[in-house]
Image (cartoon, rainbow, N blue to C red; front, side, top):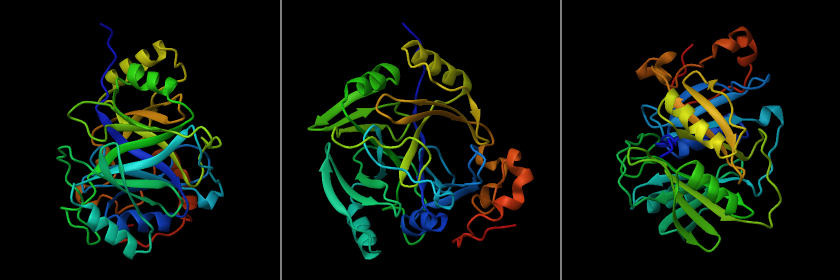
Length: 325
């Protein structure tokens, strides 16, 4: 039997937003997540924030990471053949709390039932769609209790993502044969797949057929989801997965890239979802901050150190936590 490697679940979800302050306020002040890390985007020549949010320890699958692109003026266009929605897991009885909290902040919400779960749909200030999914499955992730959000209602982390596709066929092949996913359910234009193992979280990959939408952008740009990162455990397993996917004919899988806190490979799926195969390295987020100080420094990657003065001119942030020099 072929060795296809093991994907455990979600590692993190990453997206391009507008202003850094409005993104921080949305995630930390409204959704009650912890600001886990403040650093800069590794790629490109323009200094851009890379803001991480999650639970108190920044555990895998709780991480949402943002590139605030408004300063650069780069706009994305939402459409098909593109990641469409971030789906986050909350306890079964938490949607009433969140409906009240979001609407009282002036954010429109829509209640819906989809693929056997109750959900609350709303949008990030940049227009990206989010849903809170009342997840009936077991979930041992410990939510962060911040900004008035109690643990019994808190966001556990990723449930998964939804990708808009023109048709399902090639994406089904990629998910099932390439990523080891299992088709779970279909409801009209909506299709759900489970990926990963029982030790992982954020395992639901969803597709929605929207053939009449225009093509969405794939480059960095405000208002779009950039990638879904999957937890591939370690370097050896990452290479096994790459070899298997390349052997199926998906030959554009990147070489490993050092992201400071983890190592990543990237590949574009047939449905437009950019997939990252990521594994964390010790000491992870503690490489540049102590455990009790996560999110309280501006952490400069070594290859950006000589441009610290430019980075200091990024949009200043008014934060809940005290940011140390």
